[in-house]
Image (tube, rainbow, N blue to C red; front, side, top):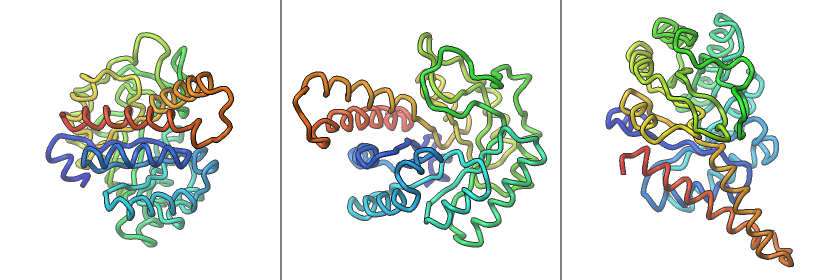
Length: 282
């Protein structure tokens, strides 16, 4: 499905969840549009939900809806935690060594690829190059250590070597993107020409992380240049929070969690629908 998306210059949406209602919001939005979707769970989200528990829930939802819904161990920072996700039955994993020195990033990513393939030859493994921050939250300023200038970002040569030596199926480059979204003004523009050159050099589909806050036009252009998966998390979290606040304000005497949370779940579902339409040129 990732290869088909890349060939058709569309992208599969990747949306994070840390609760059961989040999983349902993402799954139902994808089913309503008849599009595949990836549910992501970061280390923190997996710890809250339960590593094996979220794997079991996503599997059961996929079977119940009979729809292509996949689970990715998003931003995993060590081999041990990659192993944990692989052993739990995740469909995909990311070894995020973007803060490590280049050689060490290659070494840890390659080790993760080799282990994943031993356990499940069908698993998708992704590597990342270029630091874009670590937290999906609303930002007042650029996170420490993140640079958006093209001259300071990994280029096509680095991408080609990284993919060749690690054997990853997907490559997540830093192309002016940043985790989280700015409180005012929107995120800075992406380096679309760099996306294109990195895709040509890497020879595997690209993943755009930190797409919350990027303009629709930038996302469309990035997909046309070679991005096959687009990650959104912060926008979902903001929609969930805002809808939950309204629900609590409008129903101050309600004590049933499933009633209080319903509006928040629907708000997430609407964001997912809108993004999936964008990623697929609808």
